[in-house]
Image (cartoon, rainbow, N blue to C red; front, side, top):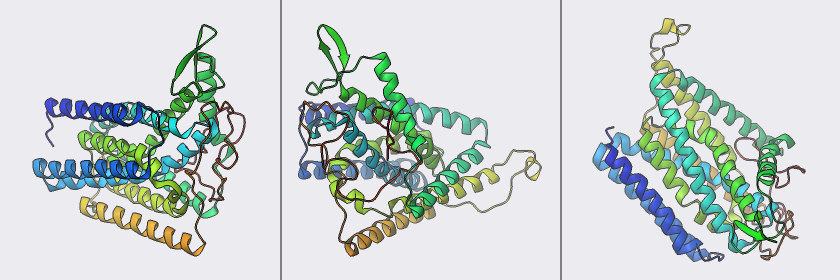
Length: 379
């Protein structure tokens, strides 16, 4: 796939432009988005991704077009898993609903920049060392098994999984003195003449770092579907662009997707097998077949896209059927309507992650939700 520097430049400028547009039209003035607003813009971003995929198909051919769609659908599905954790982060910081948009948009923008670094490093490693595919496959297989075991057992994540978020927050508070109260949508404010960070900045930092942690398995996953850095970057960017709207759109549906983790684990395991087969085909390790290529079948892009789409459809339908039989779960996102002056690190009654009686969830990396103080266990 031949992508010129001009195309790269235009793409990056367009991505930045979308984030700037999103900020000035929807986020700059704090408000809680309506269902109609969230739904409309979610569809806009999905349509944008579809149009881009068709352009890739037209310019570079069906193979690359299929790779983009497979990568985009996978990244979009994995990004939904992030939303469970965002719910808990906002509850921990008691972020008012009208301020959540700003933290989400800026956190996602930071995460996309850092993911870009991961993509560059991953592409360089793949080009230099074919055996990196073995490592990526092993990472995904480990994540898939761990996620499936936790999903079947219904266990909470280990308490030490909470350490990363708490550690980040402690570092932020050591470097930047933090207020105990929100000051509108400001990230930094002045108190008695001293510049201090607000809890909104803390939530923003933890969201950004958490999303980067998710990239540790989502980046290897998409490299298993395409080795083209341009497609990896654009699929990530387009999947993350609509994540803020998706957060407010899904509402109570999240806790009803009880089989989403099962579906994601199947997808990650499938891509892990695809990566390992590709690694065997490109083998250069001397202790495997004398460093020669191993003649194994490789999984086509069409089959990959079909398996991913079918798995997600089955997981969604099975989840909704179970939810209907069980009377439905409460809404995980029916949360933080706290006032702007809320200063507690604990959510208001009825706004916490388990307030509605929904199922306990752990994310795909086995991490519990980051704890704002680093003192108590997350989820």
